[in-house]
Every structure is written in structure tokens, then in C-alpha cells.
Length: 139
Image (tube, helix red, strand yellow):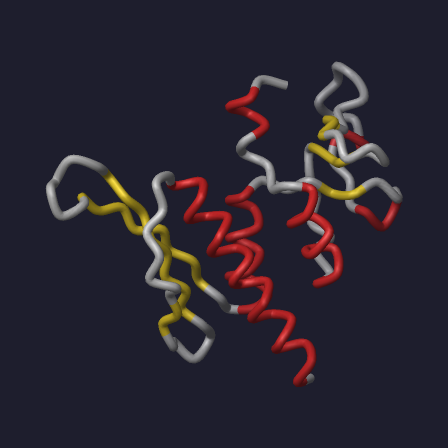
């Protein structure tokens, strides 16, 4: 896969943490036993049942898209993730930060500035994973 396309999928480490949280949505890619991203499209017919599948049927690790994970947090845990771009003080560079709105609408941010949308998105997802782990411990 092209590098730009690979960047759309969560890292292997994040995929492991999501599996622990119970993520089992349909995905078009997986990580194999060697932590290499592989597509799950097994044929040329897009109507084939196995072109997307969940980890209920396979021991390879699901590799969701970052946006898919953000949607999953919203739907399952009522956690909303926003990535906010802004100009630095000199107006020369675009920086990014994230805000997480929890189910009770507490705003959470680490007030760290990131140099790319991808960095901010990954940090926000890791923060959301930590929040969900705490929620699961309480229940």
C-alpha cells in the first residue's frame, strides 16, 4: 500500500489496545502476525462476504481507519473527539490540538500542540483509550 494510504489506519499498538476495549467493527485491513498491514479483500467481486470481516472470525488483528475509531468512540462510549487547527503566534505555521468531549460533556485536552493533524488525532485516540479503560474498570 502507498504510504499516504497506510497513514489512514491506526498503528499496530493502537489496534491492540482497541481489541482489548472490545473493538470488533468491520475493517478492510488487518495486521498479520508480523505486524504488517494487509488488506482483507480476497477477490475482485465487491459483493463477496469476506471482503470485510470482524475479528470474531479471524485471529489476525483488525486495523481500522482513524476516522472509524473516532466514530466508534462516539457511538459506543459517547466520547467525541475534535481536532482543532490554528496558526502559531507568528502566524507562520499551522498547529493542531485536540479536545475530547466526554459523555457528560467534560472537555478534556492535553494542551499540547502538534505539528500535524495525524499526530493530534493519534494522541486524542490514545487519550480516549485511557478514558475508556477507566470507564471499564469502574463498571
